[in-house]
Image (cartoon, rainbow, N blue to C red; front, side):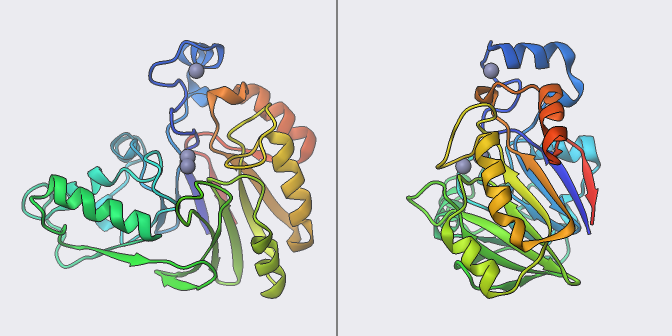
Length: 275
Ligand SMILES: [Zn+2]
Ligand SMILES: [Zn+2]
Ligand SMILES: [Zn+2]
């Protein structure tokens, strides 16, 4: 399994579009790994989230969205679900040569609502042909391509069923936890009940140096969660961190040095993990 981080920032990106803070200014100067697009990953053929940087990612990583068949959305915040870009899949108007291929879109009820709304606004009230929405429920596994995917409760955006995902493929398990604060007790309970051992965990680290328990996590909060997840680890489980905000006051170079002390894998745009 290959996990590619297309983007690793929180909603405003780094440098943030309208910001002059120290983190954004150093990113503008140094560039390279200090530049972060909005959080979005590709795990083999499965994409998680569709960020406002979809076009930028397509060009810089040579992605072919026309071949994409499975798109999981974590929640309806616009940095994770830029629904308007999906209108561009409309065949014969904005896209060509897709044949009968269907893009399966998975998410909670709010994601379904946003997708329907954007079809109404930007597509003359018509559903977008070739995209099929599937509503997910916490704790109920579904098949997505070569993966079995289970949505679990995120500690984030309580006005909808925000989701983190447990992915299984060929006996390997990935816990993808963006966006979330310290994990909901139901997540540990599910791992225990299902006797899951994790090969790879991606944890929210939005708040960097700050303390943040709910909604998102700071580095120290993330370490607490990592420790609580240890009973579900193998000897070689990788723990990576992502979804960084400039407000967390961590440059990538600083992040690398604190991650090294704690055995955590820092992410940057374009990094690939093979598990
Ligand atoms: Zn986010
Ligand atoms: Zn800034
Ligand atoms: Zn969010």
